[in-house]
Image 1 (cartoon, helix red, strand yellow):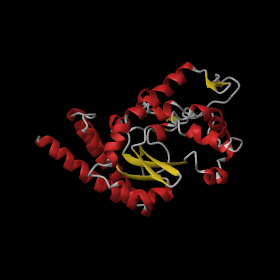
Image 2 (cartoon, rainbow, N blue to C red):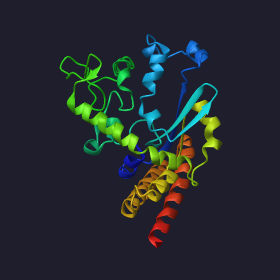
Image 3 (cartoon, one colour):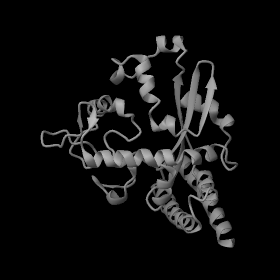
Length: 276
């Protein structure tokens, strides 16, 4: 999800802020291209072609920072994800999506997320099928003989899907300036402090409250939306924590501790906003 999508869905998800690193060799880095080992789904692609396609992704085009090192550019992008006690989507009720009409762009572009570059769509689709992400379940991809045609000759031919894909790309690119602000925002750890961890893990998640404050400061989230989000999050966190305490599972303790810390941060923000 984008940051603003997470704000709009504050009654459904407890969002975490996600830092993602996309490392791409520069054109003159011959050694990197010679040693490049692509994912099996892209194994038949020439290294320079693959890197060229990846440069078209929203993760690169909407990156909030680029760290340049000898022969490499490391693009740091910002997204969000649901933070929960258990794997899976919190919006699912059985096999049905409870927020289908207002689901985020990521879900609207299943099985090939909008952040996959156009030149990699066919390979990414085949990867989704090979990985088993294709079934009759509502949130996955129908590959039966009765399914509509999504791609033809490498191009999207499903108009509704093409529309949703364009909307997702536009939403991600519109948050580039926000990503730059978030990566320099005082309520969040400086990029220089988390960069070593990000280089190792490629993806790390932190508390969302700093991103919320940054979006509010930038005028992207007004006072009314901020109050609505904070009220919804406090209620949601209380429910989640109460349910976890009733389960009495040791594996829930870390998440409960983090949720309590996040709840305190949101309560403080709500108090400050009410006093203005």
